[in-house]
Image 1 (cartoon, rainbow, N blue to C red):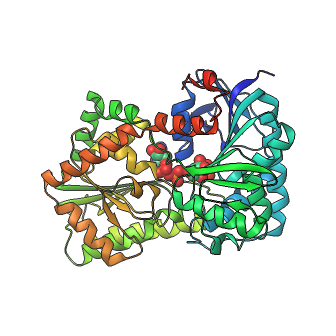
Image 2 (cartoon, rainbow, N blue to C red):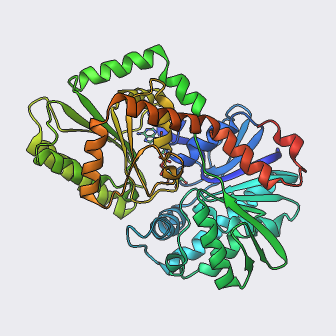
Length: 471
Ligand code: ADP
Ligand code: F6P
């Protein structure tokens, strides 16, 4: 088996099996923040990505993407249910997102989660060169760092949590809280989106493991694990290049025309997930229509909601509720040929997303809780013209960096309505000033800066310096 000096392990590979019109297998980039972020870095560095290819049964043979090798891990139908849909997405996901949806604690899922985490750890151990750096991603694989250390003590092991890490009061609900904490602390460096998360882990390590812990380092079992905040970002250059391409600029103009050339376009782009606050947003918008603050003939809303985790009941229920509500709003406030909300439930090519971002006068990103939210950053990167307003939830990790956005508490529907109106009515000079400082920040804090900051902190003794210079 070919071995690498840099191995990334993430639940999902950056390619999805998308059946082509003739039924053949056609690979396309998977939607989601993690795949977007890592794809940008790894297509430029010799590395191996260990992950799941999105189906069940034997793992498919996958093509390399440039210098990136893909090492698929197979899952059975039962494992998909217990590990991905169950423990990862029905226990950890809701709990880590402030329990905005009730987490399910099903005792049967734990064993499957452990078995699958071991399979990922073994797959990575098999493709890592002696002394390699292995970078484990996200809540799906929280046990992998400790498992990998047992299998391969020679490795430098990093762990990055893309989603929020909750305060102790919430984390303490987890029946397997000690094992999960020990699993993650098997890494040399544990990275989070925000400093608060490192603080939460330190508190838990003291309480549950009797460790000596500060917000930067935790000493447990004779080892010191470093912790810290490394806010993830986007490929700013890619988005900027797309959004200034003449065909994309033309497409944006055509889109506006197809929307009826309104005075204002409001846009939201989300995975269809209950953490994204889509229902609160629809309530706010519908009340603005009801109270006459927004008129269908001069304002349109575009909601892109790409289907996600559709086999999980709470996601199917959410989709039904959202589609019902969009239908109700359009029925009540739309006119013939002029819907109040354009609802698109499909994946888009990157260039189509760039055209949408260019069309928006107000980008509405209002998750109830989000580790980062890359859509907000993509919108800012796309707006070379300095126009456009960003309405951003205080509960997205991105709010800590994009402070010049119109920040809002999405749980407060009246506050959300007032903020939407403020953003719609803001003058061009104010918007340009806000956009320019957000763009300055993003230029300096792009995805490559994130990878360099994390990997150089992981490799603080410099033993991999030469091999990591490719980044
Ligand atoms: P999450 O990781 O929770 O999905 P993020 O906002 O951080 O949320 O990342 C979402 C990523 O998925 C972004 O890079 C965005 O461009 C991409 N994405 C969102 N919706 C679509 C869509 N309809 N088609 C293709 N990509 C999408
Ligand atoms: O960014 C959080 C995250 O869970 C990623 O790990 C994941 O790739 C993305 O959301 C999309 O979710 P899924 O892989 O379940 O479709």
